[in-house]
Image (cartoon, rainbow, N blue to C red; front, side, top):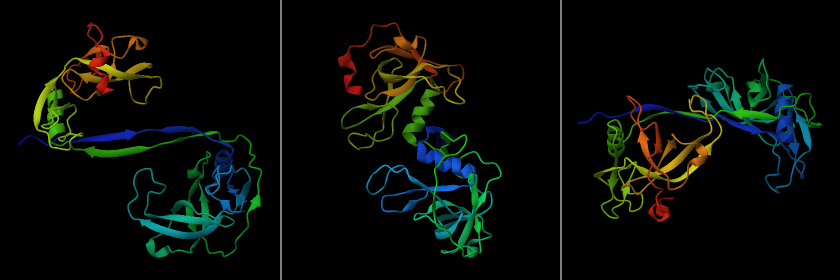
Length: 314
């Protein structure tokens, strides 16, 4: 019985976005220990604020300051915090309607246990020691015994040195275990071969194989070796350098239809200036010593493929 393949994988994409006037004021306010909402046409205060009314779609700009105290409207206990969550000890996820607001803010509550949490619990913001203009400037909420409440008050939204952009990290860690078809594909790549599987119904060869035909929905088992050469069907020029990727920009990433395959796979194109890559370019894989997959594809020197030969694979 062949060994079961598995590998830890990380998908990470730090998303950078600019802020409009409402979000800029909200995040800058958090840096200054001020919580701002936005007033809708019917007088409701939305916290966190949005730039457009969720009911009427009207643009919203009238800001209002709300209190740093509030009431829990609902909650869920988290007994085992994960990496990068707001607290390292068990905590409650809570929706808090701050005094003066008409909507609830999602955050966390620092509490000794689930028995200390209930709907209607009064809480207040615990501010982070160092604040940068992000939702994490609210370190957490904590129980607060006072029953005093406050109304919202108008606010200009003006602060010195406003926050104009944020970076939002997104990361997924998981262990990938391929099935029979993918394992055969990966094992063949380690031998510098590329194999797909042929559908017994439509007779198309799919690379990489999934063990089932995506068109007919029937199981596939017949292995077919394809390539190693192929044709660029379409491509894009990458101008932004990815973190932890030692490839200089600009470079070209392309869909490549390997000879004998009925589905294009993707790969990097090298050995040619990026502005000379084109649809129909004939390419072949380049392997590095000890590599388990092609490092990139380079031109073969053959004449370009005719468009009719790959148009169905675009």
